[in-house]
Image (cartoon, rainbow, N blue to C red; front, side, top):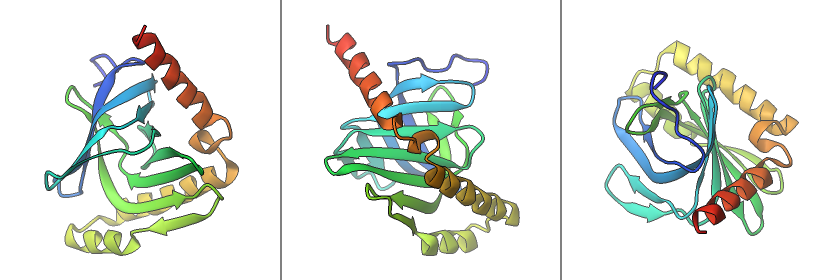
Length: 183
């Protein structure tokens, strides 16, 4: 989408995650864009319809700030809950954007960060099973292991979406855009 226009603040986009074999994994309908730059897209899901690969539909329960980057092999979801912010970090290919959607390949490995700071690596068994099933290259395996290190460093250093004011800033921005639209 380098030649066509990037979505602007307040626009809605669709997000589609795929598996390594090209099969559709999950679709988020109507994610509001909060910021775009050459390499980043920040958005929010708030009672967003999610469609699973089997056609099952559900709606997100709480507002969540989503962060995608063109160079990093992860994306970050900051879920705003009553007990604080929980982060769900997907190890995934950098995003691509076309007229249809923001798209990426989900590589199963996830890191969850709880409001108290506890971190958990999730789905390592699923990653291993899919690595064997779809023959992930050694290069993909290496890139993902390096990006787990980058992600953990961001978490520990409170960088980017993990910085103190990040979620408040972008949630406030979302409320301003929403209020402006309802005037």
